[in-house]
Image (cartoon, rainbow, N blue to C red; front, side, top):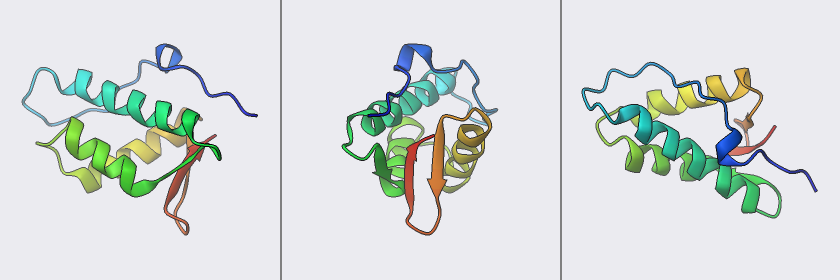
Length: 94
């Protein structure tokens, strides 16, 4: 079984956001931790991309979720945290 880093050990990178809320970085971090926890709990260490999009909408309602999802995928690949399967529309542990 692959173990995923706990939320406390996630990198401290935060993509630049245009949000006016001073808490947007905290909200983004919480959203990333929620995705990491869901991936870790899933039997296949995979979650549906729509779950990630919904998490973005809940964490950052003032942001464009589609663009934020693209940024999430890019940073996740860069940080080797998650892999995104575009054909299956799933996010999994890297």
